[in-house]
Length: 408
Ligand code: PMP
Image 1 (cartoon, rainbow, N blue to C red):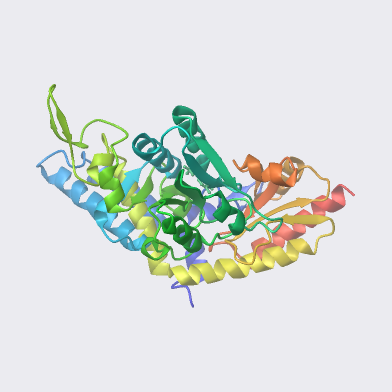
Image 2 (image 1 turned 90 degrees about the vertical axis):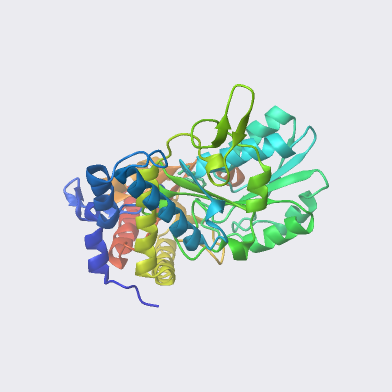
């Protein structure tokens, strides 16, 4: 599978990649935290504010019509990108966190009672733990946790044994932001569905790496953030199965989400507007669609293939540095490598790498239970995108080797 552009052409699309830091070329390997934006998105955002700005769904005038059409066509782009059945199943939110909170609140209000159970996994980002803990606190429900193995694989037998007749929802990540593990979400969903339980899949770390098909996964909710998939910040998506979304109450009230309002009674709008109260980030949604179009044009399978090749080089190279421990060695991973160089503190190593122009993330990565599982205070994480090069991976490996030599 070949990318539609050469690596030089791709890198030229992302202006920030030619920047220098500390007088050295930037080597950006923190794509799991946020991705860089192509000109196609940056220019579009600029153009929207210059020549296509008006409030969405709020007017009969020329500009409002243009924006409303583009907003609804962005919804269709998202639908096609994740292969949802209907455009009404795509809700625009502020990001993955906002989407999970929306489900935890709305689904929780309707379906969770005292003594009910919610299942998450031990490898979740805090965004897929805390909203469920808050719900459990409100409803006196119980949070149950699927453990993972030393390799970073979910223990599916333990998962099966956690399901009871009190389980109301399962919420798991598609790919771990620390370990890189791609979870067998299809299997997890099938098992939950055999027991009549819906599943939320956190796609914040999967959507940018390969083809995601919510119809094939058969999940009930799927969430992701625009900024991690080469789109703008402050926009995200909540996909929900139409039947479930129709059953759930809105979690925020305001303009656009209503059909009629009076002091006697208010009726709600149809999907997807029922869940989009107030002025949404319509510019962000249109920018997100441009980012998804960029990936589609590049070739999503080719993106995945390139990232897997870079991941293999990074894993092999880092493993060859003496004293390195890699966290997350599952056979199917997204292009994320977490590691610790001997006893050197991850923060010291991260600071030295920064001086070499290499941007990596250090710390707990908002996944403290993963750190607790390994009894460590944090890791260094290199997260790779298709625009990274083999030379950059070599520079990372060299840099890490130098750090270990410096600390003896
Ligand atoms: N889930 C996972 C797996 C993540 O990696 C992240 C972001 N690091 C989130 C959820 C939350 O995303 P956001 O902060 O964009 O809402």
